[in-house]
Amino acid sequence: MTNHSAPHRPVAGDWLALREPADAAAREDSLPLIARLVRHWEELPPGDDPGAAGAEPVVVVDLGAGTGANRAWLARHLPGPQRWVLLDHDRELLEQAVSAARAEGADVVPVLAGIEELGRVLSEHPAARRLVTCSALLDLLTREQVRELARVLAEEAVPALLALTVDGEVLIDPPHHLDPSVLGAFEDHQHRGELAGTDAVRLAAEALRERGMVVDVTPTPWWISDQPWARPLLERFLGDRADAAVEHRPDLTAEAHAWLRTRLVDCARGRLRATVGHADVLALPPVS
Image 1 (cartoon, rainbow, N blue to C red):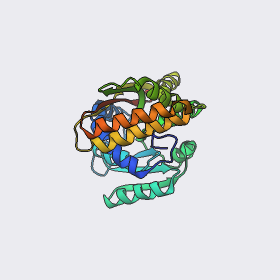
Image 2 (tube, helix red, strand yellow):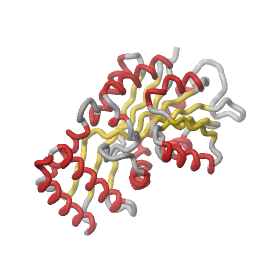
Image 3 (cartoon, one colour):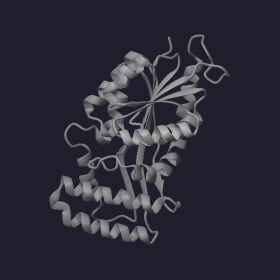
Image 4 (cartoon, rainbow, N blue to C red):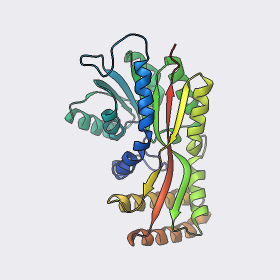
């Protein structure tokens, strides 16, 4: 449940690796949210300072942990010590994440399960300071799952940092006359059935606020231009959009393939730039 750009495919480790540098760059914009989270912990009733030597570990539950990129990035920005509970339904990805974490000496607990197990996992890992986090997950959930996530977080009074959810903004330069058709069909594909898709940030923020959580949302867009990692990421990004557009609108097959051929030529020539909108959501329980 970690890959958002190709929801019609199984999560693939190669896609997660391709997007990791774009994610890391984008998440620099969410550092003020992390500072607010740390202040929240500091304002809690008397207990261990999470940054002090010998303090009780901060317990972090990572939903849809994938290959562990979210843990690897976020752990550097949270006070230690930390215990990471990595939750994913994909055994292969989970094993990869756990192996990487343990190689770094991290305190990590693997849980082979889906998001519906969050309540149970939180009950099994009590701590004065906890956090639920995920990356590129919310848009893959159904609307009901988003509401249920908000319910569990509020009832357990657990802070959450829900990172890198797409918001639907995609700007490609130079523009192409088929951009609206292909990208529009892709977005419709993201909303198939009851999936939250690009409404996920709004839905999550509304559901959390309705349950009394204090919510901050900050944009964390991808800026893809001439970085060393840009071309393979763009090629996969474009291909996934064309594939999903055709899957959702078979009548667009010829147009989507023509669009992809042109876009790949632009990419190979170094002419393509893209902005892909994402947002991070910080939800904090009120401090009594």
